[in-house]
Amino acid sequence: MTPDTLAAWSLVGVYSAAAVYLVAFVVFLLDLAKRSAAPAGAAAVASGNAERTASGGSTAVLVDAPPAPPTGVAAPNRAARVALALTAVGWLVQVAAIFLRGVAAGRVPWANMFEFALMGTGIMVGVFLFAQFWKDLRFLGTFITGLAVLLLGLATRNLYVDVVPLPPALQSAWLVVHVLVAILGTGFFALGAGISIVQLLQSRREAGKLQRVRMLRTVPGADVLERLAYRVNVIGFVLWTFTLMFGAIWAERAWGRYWGWDTKEVWTFVIWVVFAGYIHARATRGWRGNRSAILAIIGFAAVLFNFTVVNLFFTGLHAYSGL
Image 1: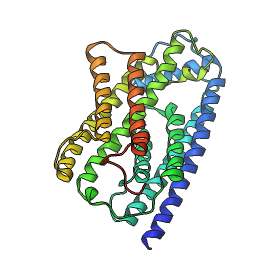
Image 2 (image 1 turned 90 degrees about the vertical axis):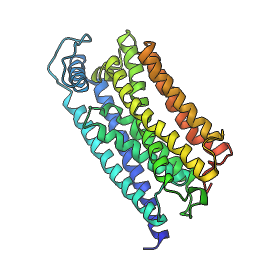
Image 3 (image 1 turned 45 degrees about the vertical axis):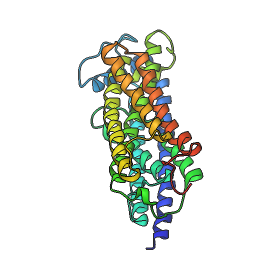
Image 4 (image 1 turned 90 degrees about the horizontal axis):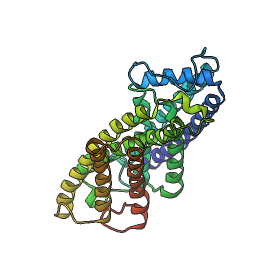
């Protein structure tokens, strides 16, 4: 096959993956609706199961409702399993699309914004899927698949470029390591932000609000979610630290200086500072609970701002090719 044909099949794969993610998003929504409609007693049992899973098997104390037979719980769990399976299928299709794009280009497929969005979305969904072997995070399925559909739709509609040769500044092995760790860090930050959003909602329910949102009784408590978000964001922070380091080394090789206050460099550093502050405040100042969650969400918002607004509306040495 010619490179143009491979690129065309890659684009078909991207559209197919987005379609499967959309179906998974709808099924995840149906699961949430069923959880919300479940009787209070059943929701409490589901909450106990979820909290025991998230805490590694420890027993959780339930205060929302007395224990009751888990009637009405099997259907939502079955829907969540179907949605998770669909997400895995969509991810495999997207991985194939990324592979075809790379073969068509004859290089790693993350040299422009379209390829970065394609790879970044794949990493985000992949982190979510593989995290299921660690904790049951299916309650984040709506957030992850919805964000994946949105990003892939925007990428194919507004950012798509044909396969083109790399500009001289990008013809380096540092393209592989620098951009890869940045994409991995973004994936973990996205997962941490999703957990933090659910944590804020769960915290309001535990404070006596949002009592009618029964779905929240089927997810771990706010404290458990806060600890999960912290662990995920620490991994993202370590990866982002390497992003800064590798970027500085690459900048010295390409432009003869380690740091030049380019717009992209500044915002990469801003993101690092936000998450460094998040970790420091939580560890030394007792910033836990809602304040910790808000900081994590602000950090991920800065990541999205860096990827969209900075790339599209600011000029600098990091301007992506093909736009």
